[in-house]
Amino acid sequence: MGVLLQISGLIIAAALFLLVVSVLATSLSQHRGTVKLMNQQMEDARAIAEAHRLEYERARTEADLSWQGYRKFEIQRKAYEDELQQICSFYLVPHDKRQLPPFKPGQFLTFQLQIQTQHDQPGQPKPTIRCYSLSECSNPDLYRVSIKRMPPPRDNPDAPPGLASNYFHDHLNEGDIVDVKAPGGNFFLDTTQERPVVLIGGGIGVTPVLSMLNEIVESGSKRETWFFYGARNGSEHVMKEHLNRIALENDNVHLHVCYSAPKEGEVEGEDYHHKGRVSVDLFKELLPSNNYQFHICGPPPMMTSLVEGLEAWDVPDEDIKFEAFGPASVKKAPPASAIASAPTAELQITFGKSGKTCAWDASAGSILDFAEANGVVIDAGCRVGNCNTCLTAIKSGEVDYVRPPDTPPDAGTCLTCISVPKGDLTLDA
Ligand SMILES: Cc1cc2nc3c(=O)[nH]c(=O)nc-3n(C[C@H](O)[C@H](O)[C@H](O)COP(=O)(O)OP(=O)(O)OC[C@H]3O[C@@H](n4cnc5c(N)ncnc54)[C@H](O)[C@@H]3O)c2cc1C
Image (cartoon, rainbow, N blue to C red; front, side, top):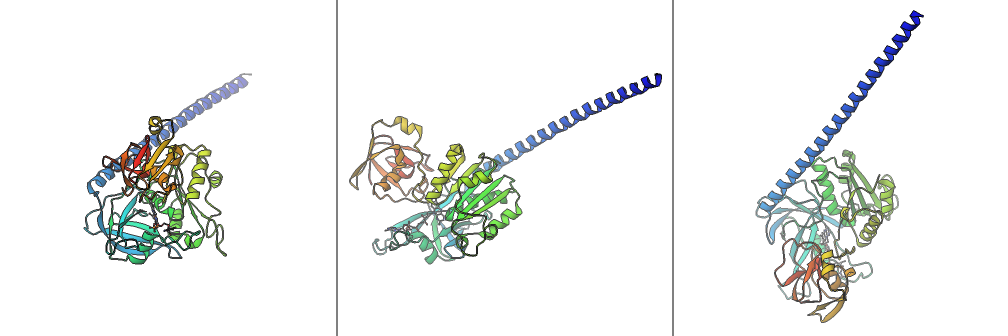
């Protein structure tokens, strides 16, 4: 009995000892867990602070080195990027050899070209203004743009081919000089954040998102990045090796190339990832959630379907960023202030020179979109309030801006690409 009592006493003591050890171990491991979490949070906070510091420095350098108006650049190198030689990269260095301002990945350059057309007075070409996205960010001493030769529209093969893009391909060569405005535009990657991103490029619309991808990789960011690229097939697949190498060398980058019309012999899973177009259904299949910042640039049908699809998937508006290379295909409502200050009756816009008066409502988009839809020609370049090409005199009335202009226009004028009428409006167009 005494032995039994001694044994049960020992068992109880051992059990108590184990209990104490286990409580200590649990609290130690919880403590370790808490310390690890705190370290991680401090690490994240440090990374964010560092990103803000770098962004501050970048913005200061940009302000110091930027320029007003047009600056001369020399084409240092010209290189084709695709099998069919339809997309050509131009590497530009400043003719004055002074340092270049940094730019935000996704921004573009505005070019002013003197191209003689059949409508011009002999010897007096009207300047042609066009914008091209910066497609590379790794060399601070040069800018690179990648330009697609624009053919006549499929439904109008007899129309003249694209003026500026063909001029770049056929007439501009290494050593030539072009006039260029400082980088601009509001479609860019916020590099102060580490939030996961989805970058989507269709056709030549790949250029700004390529610049964003390059920046993520070059900066060593481990930001989760999904890159969707839509092309018809391998003939149009630009920078294939570059993209494959990035995906191979960076665990945080997930590359998905979609061919809508693969050529015979092109194999899904080898030459490209998915047959078909880039779609929200594909995102739902591949992405763990909808909690990403989406950046989209591509042809009008792609932009419309993706933006609408993402909205339907409950992605908040502020997480869907997009840029159109031509007339805006995705119409965004004007700001609440514009609607609040507008009279409830239908607004009338009169285009004085064209002799047209048309009824405007909020679904019409910008004044520029509205003018084009009504057959009124207003020259335009960037369509995002940077290049001033669409600047038009206001004869009466006022406008509201859907987004702030990069530089406020002179009194009595408006940038039609980013403005909407406040009330009845008469323009000198
Ligand atoms: C912010 C921004 C960034 C951009 N980035 C890039 C980029 O990185 N790379 C790139 O390649 N492009 C880019 N673009 C597009 C670029 O600016 C030009 O719009 C594009 O190169 C076409 O210009 P173009 O002068 O060659 O064609 P345009 O002369 O403007 O012609 C456009 C189309 O109209 C057709 N056309 C011309 N005349 C007629 C007519 N009488 N009847 C019917 N059709 C006609 C042409 O054949 C052509 O298909 C960007 C645009 C913007 C706004």
